[in-house]
Image 1 (cartoon, one colour):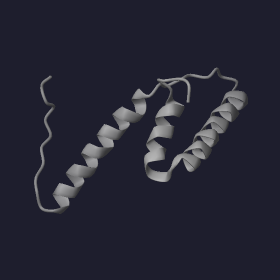
Image 2 (cartoon, rainbow, N blue to C red; image 1 turned 120 degrees about the vertical axis):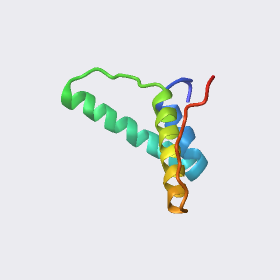
Image 3 (cartoon, rainbow, N blue to C red; image 1 turned 180 degrees about the vertical axis):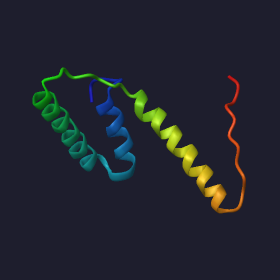
Image 4 (cartoon, rainbow, N blue to C red; image 1 turned 30 degrees about the vertical axis):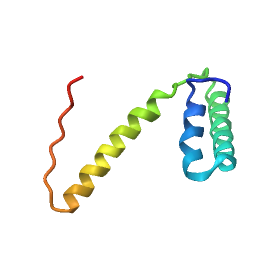
Length: 84
């Protein structure tokens, strides 16, 4: 991908690690086709989300998964935000 901070590039990088480059390209193309369909059917302009939404969602998902796993193992978990 040529655009550095795009949602398509972020999706491609996420999928390449798990499924390989070929399937990642197909998935990104399907995602783009779905976005194009929604743009034409609803007559709205395209809005680029950037790469950040995937990162933020992934962090929340990882936190929830780790907490759930520890609770299944009989641990009580309380998460606190680390100071910068």
